[in-house]
Length: 329
Image (cartoon, rainbow, N blue to C red; front, side, top):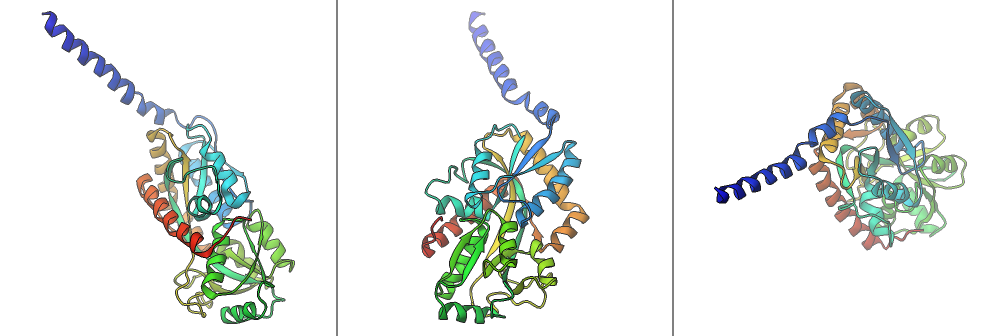
């Protein structure tokens, strides 16, 4: 009889441990969220990242039953806000808008970005991808990509371009352009698309690779001149514009990707609930129509799918950073 008691005690202990590990998990998701959630956008308000975040947050808020508050934390190519997310409590109440610049570029461009894109986050899911549009101030005497390249070769280093911050996807799209074209441009970093576009309109900078959403109205109002789009195919928003590759720089392509991440260690039931709310938002006809109108193509994924995408994008863009010799400024 005593010999049977020990196995029974052991089985009881294992059952208790199993319940402790698995039993409470459903309640984590059931109780979440019980208060507002913060979604950190690591760039200033008004840019493509901000537009996408606000659009998705509003729809997810309705599904989750709690408000998602946008917190714009710009700086260092988006790494300041992204680092804040990485160091936040993994409880599902602080999320981050992930992107090409923050998760694929900044970790290679900055000596110490303060986070590892593969280890410090729990990916929730992809949102969308979109190209950029090459804009110049109307006072710049170029009307095409070939003219822009010729002008830059004639005046090396004299043509300045704005970015949404050192290490942003917009910055590296311009770096890749200059490297591929064999030209020298002068980089002027800003803390987001809004401030950069303001200075482009004011003539303080000559060139900007802009996300499509904030550029559409400015082009229509002729406050800036659009030369080409950076994606591999033409944009429905600018159907008459060629791609950069078509316009004189074969092989060039630059697109940005967006998603939502949580701090590493966030309980999987919470991640799954957030992913479900995100997928519900992305399947809504009004959201899909709005993203398409802003030049973005919807991407839908599992958390594992987004993790694989982060890995692939970081591998791709880190190689471009090294090959171009780009440095943080």
